[in-house]
Each structure stands twice: as C-alpha cells, then as structure tokens.
Image (cartoon, rainbow, N blue to C red; front, side):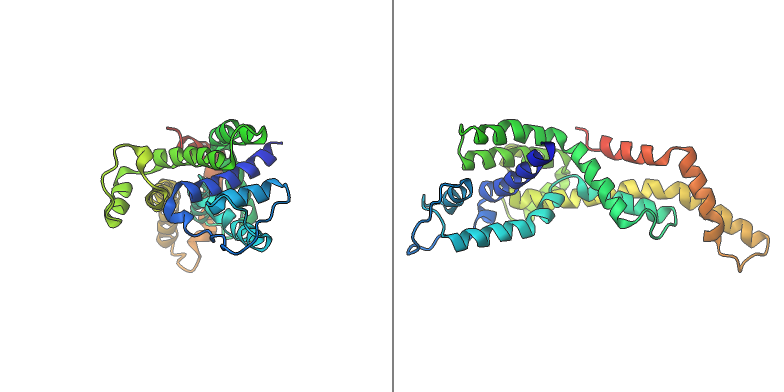
Length: 265
C-alpha cells in the first residue's frame, strides 16, 4: 500500500510541477479545436480533459501521447527533485575513496540511494497522501487541486534544501523581480537552483569522506618509497587498511546517518 501511495504521489508531484509553473505547463500539447471529446468515464480521461485547460477531454491518441511522455520523463524528474541526487553522488564518491572499482556494484548503490531517498522523503510523501491523494480518491477535490497541493509540498522541500545564493543566481539570470516569500519562487528558477545546491552539498560531503582515506594513501606511499619498493602499487597495500578503518568506525552507518541528517531542516 505504501508503494502504491508513493507511485501515485510521484505522479501527482510531476503533474503539480507542470501545472503550478506556467513555463513548464506550456510543454503539454493543447487539445485540437476540431477533435471530438472522448469520455469513457475513467479518471485518466477526466484528468486529461482538465489538464487541457478548456474543459474538454483530449482525444484518445493525445491522451496516450501525454501519458507516454510523462512516463518517459517521470523517473528523471522525480529523482532530480528529491534527495536522490545528493545521496547517489556521495555513495559513488565513497566507493572511489575506498579504491573499489565495482564494489558495491551500481545496482546496490542505486538501491541504497532509492531506499534512503524514500526514508528522507517520507514526510513529504505522507503530506501528499493526506492533502492530495486521499481527498482526490474520495472525490472531495479535483485533479487540478490535488496536483497543486502536491506541487506545493515538493516546492517547500526544495526551497528548504536550496541555498539562497543559488536562488539569487538563477533569479538574476532569468531577470526575475524580487520574491517576497519563498513560496513565490517559480519552479523554473527553483529547479536548477535546487540541483546546483544539491551538487555542491554532495561534493562537500564527498571531500570530507575522502580526507581520511587520502591520508592512508599518503602514509602507505611514503612507507613504500622509504623501503625502496617503488615498483609495488600503493593501492594494493592501502586498500586493506582502508577497509579495516571503514569497518572499525562503522562507516556505512555513519555515512547513511549523516546523509539522512543532512536533509533535516
């Protein structure tokens, strides 16, 4: 049930972004004036008719086109607008700092990042479930209001994780007027600012992770050079010490806990 709520909430998030921000909403195809309305009584048809903006349902072919387009960009949009970006970058840098090429494999890293992202985004998902999904399922609100509420929840999460300097940068590039409150920032400015801020935070965390392992590499390389073993690769000798240090300090728990706490506001 949680998984169904998350998938439906994710769809509402993407639709909310497209409807809340007029610049992104223009990407949706408009209903042709000569096309006859199609109403099969399903929720998808009514939703597409409301998204078209003129009160008429889109034709079946356009409905399929819009649905397939959303399914194509849905994973990338959801991943870039959540905590996944920061988490997967930090985990990848950790693997490189340990000197391991394919251990853990990419599938394991992506799985860890997804589960940790679900843990971090659980408050937002619960808000979307309570404010948008449940009322819409009971017929209390329309699809437009449901996606609008979902977009506001995601907007609030991204604003809290975005640096003010990054927001000012993209606002100046867009020549946007000053915003009175954080809620007035449009998605067209907030999205690139949020991604930029996440990348910066991820590399800062990765730098702190690299430091202790870099010291081990320097010590091992200096020792081998002093012993005249210049033909022996320092990586082969330093890797067991890195793994030993990582296990002794319970590195995975520290890394996952630090990543989760870095999103606390």
